[in-house]
Amino acid sequence: MPEFPSKEWLDVYVERINQSAEYKEAAATWEGDVSYVFEAEPDKGVPEDLWAWLDLWHGECREGRYGVAPDEGAKARFVISAPYARWKEVIRKELDPVKGMMQGKLKLKGDLPTIVRYVKAANELVNLAASVPTEFVDEKLG
Amino acid sequence: MATPVTYPDAEPNGLASMLGGLIEANLAAHPERERLLAKPATYAVTAPDAGVSVSIRLAPDGVIVRNGVIGTPNLHIETGSENLIGLSAVPLRFGLPDATTKDGRDVNRKLFKGELKVRGMWLHPGKLARLNKLLSVL
Image 1: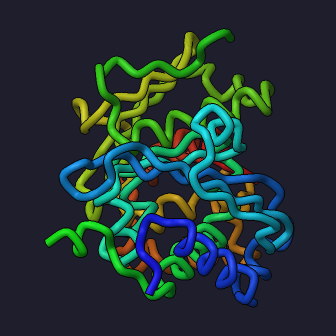
Image 2 (image 1 turned 180 degrees about the vertical axis):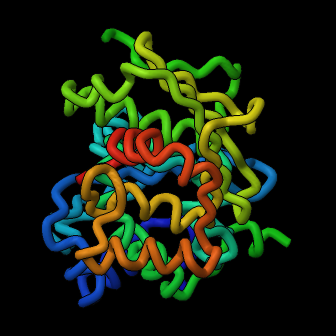
C-alpha cells in the first residue's frame, strides 16, 4: 500500500485520474497544471514542505512529479496548500475541499472563476485521491 | 479602478478570500461590471456547514469584504458551502437564476425547500441581481 505523501502514492493517483471516465468528462476542457503543497508537520513525519505537480489537460493527467522544487511548483496555474494533517482529512473524505477552502483550512492560489467553473472536476480529483489505498506516514510512526 | 476589493480584517476568512477573489477576478476580466458598483448595497453571506460568514459592501469607490455579519445588510444569503460555490456558475437572466435552464430551476427548488435562504430578496431584487452578476463566472 503506497505511503502518503510519496512518489508511489502520486503515481497511483495519476493512474486513477487517467482511468476515470467521470474525471475525463468533468475536466474535458480543463487546461492547466496544479501543484499540491503538503506543508510540513515534523511531529507527524513530514519534516519539510513537499510539492507535487500535476499536468492536467483535457481530462487527463499527462504527467505527475513528486518532490518538485518550490519555485518550480509555484509556477503552476493553481496551487493548493495545506498542512499534511488537513490533506489526510481530505483524502479520508473527512473534510470537503470546498468547505475547507471557505474555512481557510486549504489555501488556493490561482484564478478563482476557473476553479468555480470546474468544481465538479475538482471534486472528482478528491474522490480519486480517496480511492487510492493509502498508508499515512504519521500512522507508521506510532 | 486600481484596487476594487479591500479586506479590512487582518486575516480575512476563507469565504471572504473566495468571494472577494471572485469579484476581483471578474472585475479585472469584465471591467464593464464596475457599473454594478454605482449604487451602495450591503450583503451578508453565510455558509452554516462551514461555520463562516462575510459581509460585502458595494460602493462606487470599491468593494469591502469583512469577516462575519456586520450590522443589518440589505440582503442575507444563507446556504451550504457546495450550493454557495455553485451559485456563481448558474446561468443568469436579468441577474437572477435563469429558470429556463436546469441549473436555474435547481436554485429555485432550493429556495422553495429552504436549502437556500435569501432574506431581503423581495425588497431588494435589483441589489441581489447586482451581486449575482459580480460573482458570476459565466
